[in-house]
Amino acid sequence: MLEVKNLSKSFGERVILDKVNLTVKDGEILSIVGPSGAGKTTLLRCITGLETADAGQFLIDGQPFDPQGTAESDRVIGVVFQDYNLFPNLSVMENITLAPIMVLKKSKDQAERDARGLLDELGLSTKGDLYPWQLSGGQKQRVAIARALAMNPKILCYDEPTSALDPAMRKEVARIILDLKKEGMTQLVVTHDFDFADEIADDILRVKAIDQPQDVAAEE
Image (cartoon, rainbow, N blue to C red; front, side):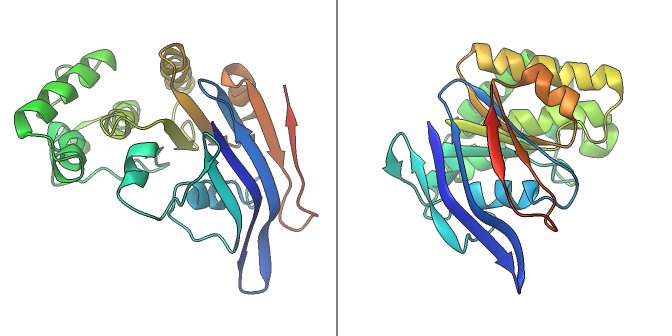
């Protein structure tokens, strides 16, 4: 279980997050929804260690956790970025196996076996030798998910996973997220798409625009 307590973040004099609290239960999906500028992505970046919080506490299974602490962070929280962040000069297989080899110290053979299993699971079994520029947006999204899963994270976070996808691919991403839930994956999804959030989430946190008092409320 992930808990965030009294998280605050400002850029200069501009307050983005003000004492935000949230909980993501084991095996469940939490969606964070709200308009552009509400701080959704900043919140996600603080949780994943890509931004430094000004104040607040992070707990994993009741124990303090520093998202920026060590390489262990990569094995606890995985991230699927809005623009995928795939390395354009690496093949799909190389994108997925790079971190397991470098961080988890897996052998190349083991990393590739694990990657092939993920590609099969995500319907990309024939795409391992292709490069990102040869893939559709939906395929890039699935490669990004496979790359995150290759690190065996306890929690998987998504930043606007449907923002660039057509309705058919939006349904496909929803299916993948719900399938991962069936496997026990704890997931946190940042989205502006309220309907998508309602479709996938066990709980929803709604954040207000930054020019309004910051308020985060949970609903079943």
